[in-house]
Each structure stands twice: as structure tokens, then as C-alpha cells.
Length: 249
Image 1: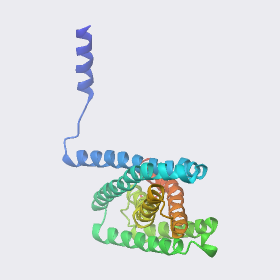
Image 2: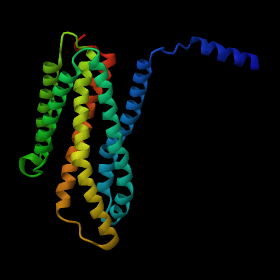
Image 3: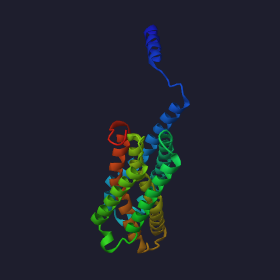
């Protein structure tokens, strides 16, 4: 029996052929940790949108005062830092891809500028949370137009004769991912942090929750729901980078 097990292990080891260059090792570890962090981030995003929103609607104020201060800080910790690690490693990997095909500085600079401009427009769209811009359908339409323009700009300004499907797909999907990250740190987390503090103070000492809380909650919800829908095309382009060659070479 021991002989058979040993023979199986030897046979298994003989068919393994590890890469003999450092870059291959770097890339697999970058992609691996990118996946792990991304699953954590997007998993928490789906939890918030598919489970937590409806759960909070069903709880009364005293129960929220107990649940929110305990649940949300923990969930938002993994949510926001998962986003940071995912995007940081993704950008690192994207620059490796660009370095093989074109001028990294020019392409990356143009890409980042387009993404930041798109997010600033989204930030302005979400700022009022009143009137017409409190309408989720209108916001969805405006963001869809912005994402179409983002895609066009990435493909128009970043495409070269040598651009691969991987570089272009990651450029589009990664751009959406950066916007999602900026929504997390620029809107969702700052607003939720204040809401959590107010809810905790109300539960512990009866301090009234400011009326501003409703506006902050609405804005954080809209940004979170936007991230939920953006994750769908973002994940498509990330998968297409290796499995669906429809852009570039």
C-alpha cells in the first residue's frame, strides 16, 4: 500500500513542470491575490445589496441600534480594504501587460485621466440626492452613458496596432473597477462611518440622529447600488481578457 502511494506521488511530481522564469511566478501570485481580494470585495458588495438592504428595512430602530454598530464596521472593513488590494494589484498587473505592448506612461496616464474624470462626473451626479437626480432610473441612465463613453475613450486613446485583447479588456474592466473603488472610499465609507457613529450614539445615550442622516444613507445606497450593477460588466471584461478575444489581437 505504501509502495503504491509513493509511486503515485512520484508520478504526480514528474508531470509537474514549474516555470523557470521569475515573471511567470510574479504574474500567477498577482492574479491569485487579485482573485482572493476581489472575491472578498465583490462578495461583501453583493451581501450589502442582496441581503443587508432588505434586512435593515425589516428591523426596528432599537434593533438597528444593536446590529448596525456591530455588523457594519466589520463588514465595511473587509469591503473597503478588499477593494484597495484588488485595485492595487490589478493596476500592477495591468502595467505589466502594457509594458509588453506599448508605452506604459502614455497609455496608463491617459487611462487614469479618463477614469478619474468619469468618477468626478459620477460624484457630481450623486451629490444632490434630491429632485430629478434622486431618481435611480435617471442615475442609471446617466451612468450607463458615462460607462459607454469610458469604454470608447479607453479603446480609442489606448488602442495601438500591437494592443492585445487582454490589455484592452483589462483597461475597460479595470477602469470600472477603479470607479467602484472611488465610490467606496469617496462616498460609501465616509457616509456610512457617520451613520454608524450616529446610530451608536442614539442607542447608547439617546442622542437624536441628525436629519442629514437620511440624505447620507440615500447617497451611500445609490453609490453601492451603482457598484453592484457596474460589477457585472466589469467582471465580463475581466473574464474576456483571457477567455473571450474580441478586442485587439
